[in-house]
Length: 439
Image 1 (cartoon, one colour):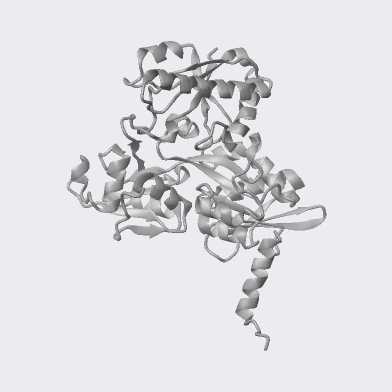
Image 2 (cartoon, rainbow, N blue to C red):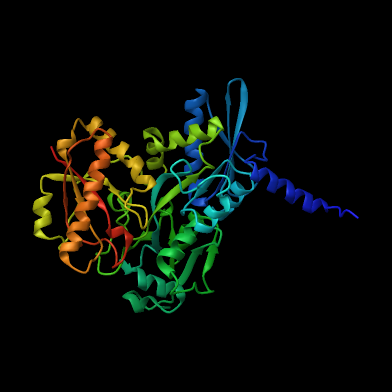
């Protein structure tokens, strides 16, 4: 006898079937699900900016009646357009994309290997067509404004959140118990903190208070002299931000240069993922808008770090060698680093798009390839000669990529394994900095 499926099983089968065929099971013209860091302010700003450009008409935002959800409304081509932004955490966004309920997955962490493999039959989420870095964020470590502690190492921060360090007096602060504030398990902010700070060495103390909202966490820390928390850079609000160090590298505070270049130990990328090249005109248009200049200007207005390069004169501390000061004395540094896909020699997805951004910067600033200098760096190597060779090869690789963007014969050099920005073995140490001749 043939077995009948229950209504619940039939509903599940329908969602799976839709997902396998890449069909969205929703009424809105576009749905964005995922990260609260992205979805609370940034995604609605990008959607509003794009819809205004797309329709030439006024755009409005309204609440849906559910916490951390917004609907952006406009009219285009004679019909109403509705875009839903649901910001319940990065993991919820992946599940919605996989189930065909979302057109765009907003995430404050990169796609996990398991997720990419699960999605492989539809699209490669690690490809340039699917993975879109829309902003750079610094995971800010927050304390009460009256707290005299100014900096912590990543390891000390891990011990605090594991409950091994329980009083501020143990790290140079007042004799006061430490109260832990943390994002919830569905959050990409939590995934980033867990990966970069706790790792496999520490587990979060059960006493930590958990939050779905970055802003609410920050507000509560700013009212608690015992508190410590972490949130996206756009949610610092009234809290004090600590400088963070990794290994023997100097402690850095998150700012325009340290975060945009990803030198700051807790810098992270904010993503939008789509299942390959989008067939939905609104989706592809939104992605193009978000990655281009106008979209990146909205990124900056939202409190995150734009990927539009600017020239900055760094403030060198005592750890910077005299030889490096002489090398760069007539140059400013662009707020972009070229990095490579992990375990590979090719540039990662962000770096591929940054090539065009550097070209656009030169055109807008009235400069040429002759005004650029690339400086490559390597992680700690067994000997100085090997480190020098690796750093020069990295710089040469970027030089060749820039030549393909019609920026030929850029000056380049390597600086070996000196001036690390992370601990030994940190992938962030292997980078190519871009310097531009000052006027």
